[in-house]
Image (cartoon, rainbow, N blue to C red; front, side, top):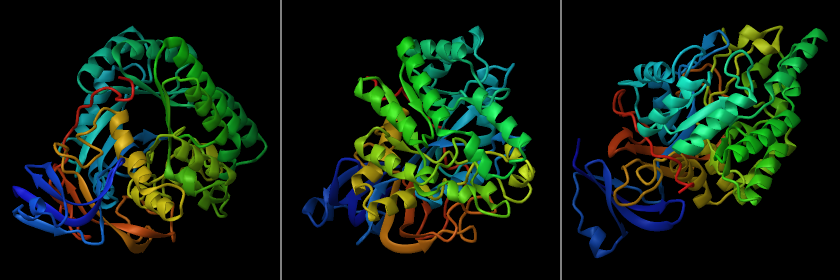
Length: 467
């Protein structure tokens, strides 16, 4: 590893500042920043100099919601930790937080160990884990305390998927009470899965089997109802709550109301809800199956409310919920029965670029782009300022970003291990040019120069919005 790198003449953008500055990197960390052209900056010597003239210098993205190698619906997510983290790096993301899964009848520890085994030595970038809690009992609750102590500080529960990941209100309350004591953060998939299953059964009985019915049965009102219920359970438990993949304006309204009351409630949305809609689910010839995910894509009018939520900070984070399944052989499992289509979209490589497009389109500012994609997820999940910013002492996870380069998103050119792009043919402005992870070049002027095993497991502290 080279000792010192200097990045010169770029516009450094963080969640709080924009400054024309040079960045000095030493031993994998940011050592100093100095205004470009000043004697202090000019005096720096380095083994490697990167010219960022006309480019942005931004923190590496933090994607706090990915599912590499997730078993689901009789198959597995098509990205491994190796292919998925490489694709993330291509898209300017330098840290992922994936989900280890507790299976019913097994311990949290078994699930966590299994995910460590999948990831270790295979990742191109740094990674952490949340824990999916599928089986709340006295042993599980004790284990939660131990996991928080060792840096797995967030736990996901599901109000959806009865028979798989589902927790009832009593199990949710117990886990929330425990997290109120141990400092953990409960992440909630908020959809009323019991009611949805009734609507699925009725739709199939009517012969409504196409992918578009996936969106119709998973009603926005059932997302809003579950969001409301999760907030109230958290309030009873005196616990914080993070609602994942918010897609419906009615659910945003529930979050906004809770936050206006001063409750420690947070919300995440994803690029698919900001850029895609039920129009995609309705694409003919089973093409709509490519867009089946849960929560589902909504009618287009929901998009404006999600953008507004990001501007008003009623939504704080944009993650991908990256969970790719190939169209051929995986999504096709649901031909003739939408309920058998594996739920999930590929997106880990597209998030930073799509959100930059949102800057170009005037939805958000440049600093808000960095805030929702880098700084806030790092703070939310206990990794700031090691991750999520460019400041002395931070890990040198840095992206040189060309704000004027144009690209067309396509399965032909992306690096995710999946046979389609959810954004096929979409033209965007802005592109990752060079990526450093802890000071090492992972992408060098649009060439992959990283390697599996560079990425290391990152234990996390508790949510930094609660202290």
